[in-house]
Image 1 (cartoon, rainbow, N blue to C red):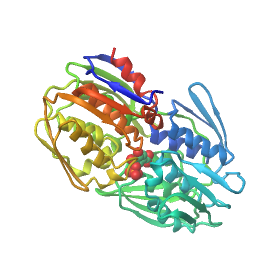
Image 2 (image 1 turned 90 degrees about the vertical axis):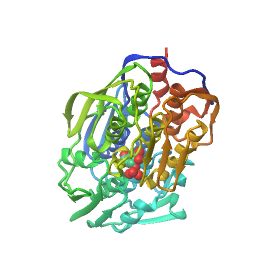
Image 3 (image 1 turned 120 degrees about the horizontal axis):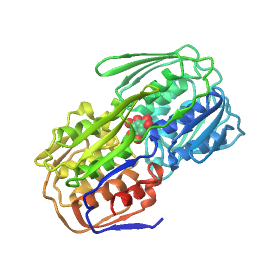
Image 4 (image 1 turned 120 degrees about the vertical axis):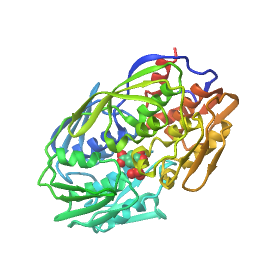
Length: 439
Ligand code: S3P
């Protein structure tokens, strides 16, 4: 792949149908849960990106057999905590916070120390948010640098359920403790602020004894240790977070029409749709169906001429958490001043995304007011960039790269965007789809 891509022209009107690769959260969860099942599980349309390959490599190092075919992946699980490995094992979560954090949940009983490493971006992120609750199970953690990777984990022989309050709205923290609960006798009780609920839906589907009570702000999840998990097949639906870049591309391209097939529209992930619709985007769900508890739909998007600013309700933050960069781009083209608040979690991602969002908009000539937790964006419906914009040194955050490409194709100017290989962590076919639409 090239080291820099250059874009000098806006995209022309398009009318097309596309498929988006498999959902990343579900792909990683399927790999990890299939490794705990008994026998052969098979997934179709598994996302074949670096984050998911890192999950597959990790379970292989833990003694699990994996076969990868043209459009399927088979995992031969050895049951709960059925890992077999030698001393001095090193696992590499690469760029993936989800993998690193969920994986630790599965290792709470590891008899030998295992070292967990990650890439430059992941090594800047906080791991105490999962190691603190996992320590309550009796598991030990050894950090070289405070709360950052690399770390080592040493399990405890017998583990009992814990009570845990998850108050960041982090699905990774919630899911890490849920996976640890598979190893714990008694009941693990989690009180969790709202976040994506794929783990809960999978636990229910797999008949892992799980009780869930929902209140307005929190979900109460009680998990009892299952005797075993049956092997299971799964058709991974398209990723809404990856789709979001194309939803915005179509929204910002006059008279365009785009149909995205088979996307996961789990309500805990559709904040981006709600926000964009409030701003005047024309987005429609077509053919909604339920698959193993997950909601799937085709999504139809039509170009929108009149976009208006939003005073974004914070209650939508968690269901749009990975989409704010691309939402900020729409705000940059909307009439009026948009306001997004309570977004401190955005600076905890693959890069400090709240800061980067402001930085890129400023480079585009769009005024912003930034605090540590919020941003105001002064929209320009007729924005026409006339200068050279260079995007580099962004910790290879895949979503910064993709946002920049969509900005270049919809707002003009000349763009040089470094490190296109950053897309490989979540969406390796991104540029191929752009090419298909941009002919
Ligand atoms: C994810 C949860 C979110 C999200 C990430 C994927 C998951 O992170 O940003 O891309 O699959 O559980 P947090 O749990 O830190 O909010």
